[in-house]
Length: 147
Image: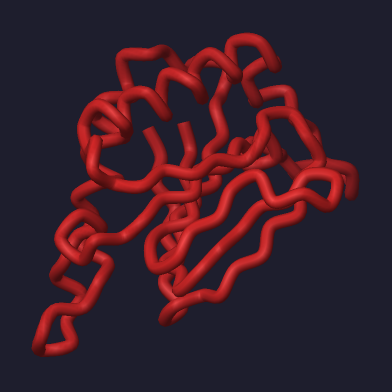
């Protein structure tokens, strides 16, 4: 499982010109699953994401979590996070989970986030769709997490 986490002032995702997910201050999370991923990693990944200290405290230090600042989440599936470019110029996605298992893991991850943080507003993209993502980076702060 691979997450690209971006701290944002706002973010949205559109499918066919229609906004399907939108947040204000919070985290835009791109999530991809590998062929080896299992549901057992999801609680740990959700806990880590929800407790990352990426927001400033009164002293201006990144010392507050999403929940502490009342932030929101926008979680978007992105299988291309497992693209490999070891040879040539066209990426290989052989390590990415096939669509059906990836969808199950994505939905289970969203459920786990809702279970662990029921008060955090959670928006999503549309699995398997061509999406347009707009964001206003805040910092910028971008991290890659992997399990």
